[in-house]
Length: 239
Image (tube, helix red, strand yellow):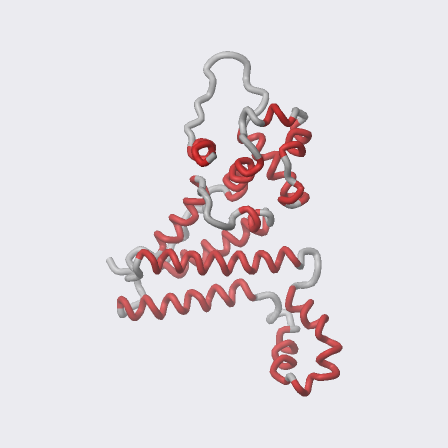
């Protein structure tokens, strides 16, 4: 199973030089799966559904993809795509752009939040995201383990906000929902929770709502900057 997945994700995939063009391809199967997951979520995905989408039999898919787990891995590679080119600037600027790009990917394909968890084999595109984030921290004085932890922390923050956004899709943001849910309680018992009332009142305005992604990202980067400054004395990458 592991060898099959390695071959699927990393190839090579030689193409037949003669004969008719194959009716199916791994890429086409993966794109059909992405379409189903985008519309209905990962739970709706099955080899049968993909076969129906392509107008083929389920058994014909197994010539290209061994099973659902391998299909999901191919779908992740297809949906996540390669990371955008690194922006110009220091490590903080680059990681900020990287984090926002990752958040945009999760927003386009919310099922990726379910498909990219746990220890598993990464494909070239997904590994390129990790490479780009780690490269941004080169020369900062952080150890390899610290750079890995920093990337995990950033991606976990982005993932957490993505899960929250998915849960409230099509409705008011999570802060507004919380204010509405606790409105009656705080009207009756607000004197006992003055700090909660104050914070929720200030978040009700347009400048206070749903800024958790940026706020959390900036605080994480502030902490990294403090650590890098202690290591280098400047907060700038070392040459």
